[in-house]
Each structure stands twice: as C-alpha cells, then as structure tokens.
View 1 (cartoon, rainbow, N blue to C red):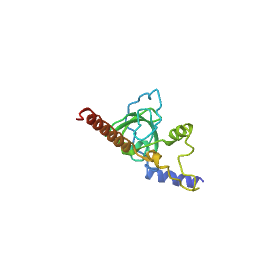
View 2: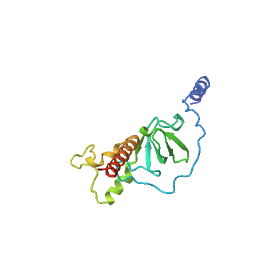
View 3: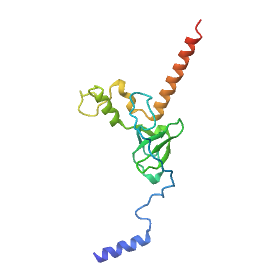
View 4: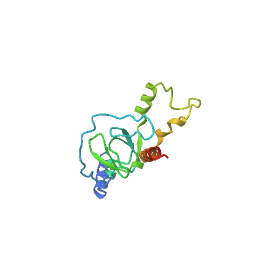
Length: 163
C-alpha cells in the first residue's frame, strides 16, 4: 500500500490537473426570488415565478453541463433572467429553457383532468393533443404569445373601422 501511495503521489505531482477541474464561477448578482410562484395554465401563459429547467449549455460551464431547475425572474425574447437555488441570477436564451411539468400536472389533476398522458401504452406515453404545449421551449411560448397579441390587435381594429 505504501508503494502504491508513493506511486500515486508521484503521478499527481507530474500531472497536477488530475482530475480535471472546472473553470472558476464568475461573479453573479444575487437576488431574492419573486414572492409568488406561477403555474402555467395554457400555451403562452408564462410569467415571472414560473419554474423552468435550464438545458445543458444554457449556463456558464462552471455551473456544470446538466439540467438545472430555475425560476423565471424576467421574460424577454433574446435573453431571460432566471434564478437558481443558490440565488444567483443568470441570463439564458429562451430556446434553452423548458417548463417544469410537475406543478402543471398537479394543477390539471386538481381541475379534473384525469391524465395528461394516454394510458393505453405502458411504455413512453405521448401527451394528449391539447397538452402538447408542455413540451415547448420558452421561445415557443413567447412566439405563441406574440401571435395571439397580433391577432387580437388585428381583430379589434377590424371591428373599430368596419363600414
């Protein structure tokens, strides 16, 4: 054992970066979370306080290349601000953010929806057609919201200026 320990010590001295280390974490603002949590009820119903998953590649490499649970703090088309559990604030592109499905599923069950998945197959189940928005990225929700706003504005103008 002493010889093995000595050999490992010499190897570590020759290769000081073993095991590989991640880059140091950059300084980030810390902010208190919103005092409420928002549960989306349909496509485009995204507000601050919504829980999201940040997909790999969305955060600085120092925070790891895994899915991270975060709360939406500010919604924007180019970069959204999210807060992680350690209260740090990060800017992430909306196409790298996906919804946390658990609160939505719980709210749907409380509203009387029996299941959001087809129960005919025991293996991977697909969502019912009206619940496909659960798999959208945040960018798709923003796009859906902008389409609805544009359609609403157009229909109001047509009614105002009808001859």
